[in-house]
Length: 410
Image (cartoon, rainbow, N blue to C red; front, side, top):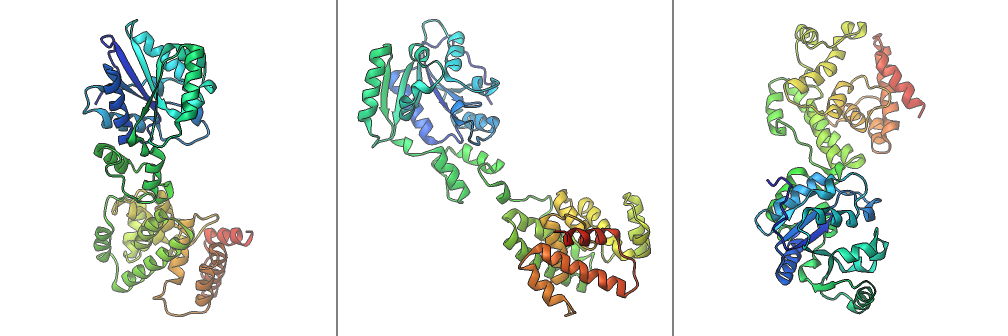
């Protein structure tokens, strides 16, 4: 991997290929090589922008990702190099500062060619210190075939006449490829092969760049199948059937109310929500002590309330789940709590309404509400649960009382 430090003292001519490179693509590489060949430059320097002045209101991928993708794309061409000048410079990135810095690093008689899109020529006088910039380097205006050149040629002529600047025009077919189109293709699950170098495609996939945060795949140390195999030995047949039914219900709710990411998390949370349910009582108490799980008086008196809190710890230690959303959904699937997350509500409700349950009063209404409004379903199920607990002369856990008060107030 290159260090980002480039020796330019032996170069008589250099082309600068600036851009956000978000991501770099084959159009950039073809353009750079075309400029290198036409102007016989000693080196083409790719210059990923740091905080570009013209994109302050746009989201740009972190500069280290863009830099590394550019290095991967260019590393097989000894005439290409990548500079960190702009990404390491604090504040807004201006082209004039970059050119002046390069001038300081180069021999005094170096000739610089700044490669830019033809559209930028129309906007050149909106840049910082444009008059000075036009005297420091040649500009190479590149565009794709079919670009309306007449207006551009008029502007180039006026600039050259006024500033004695050298502005060159090049048509590059590969510029039909665009970074914005590549980003859209990734978001739409369309292929980008042959639009970017293979190393760049692999990098994008590895770091899940340009994928909506809510659609990123959730990765677990153990696969779902491995978790299921492990869980089968910990649950009774009846409890395992219930668990599979909760999974189905949780996935349906997540598909309605959440994202692909919520669906993946719901599957794991539902799978493990009762992972400690069939542990013997003495084992539950011993593990709670060992894992420093605080048990209040109600949980000590009603040990069935222990399994969700212990289950969250078992999911973390034995199933290697470290996602706090999933652990929270397991932890509160029995008592509920105030202001639950979407995933916590989905697991709480799915556990109550799953289709393998024998019919009981209030079940049909709970199922109806679950597919209308989760908060309404939460309130109704909490009311039903609390009524059931009171009917059996059991103690109400404070978390359930707080949860009902919260959803009544919404």
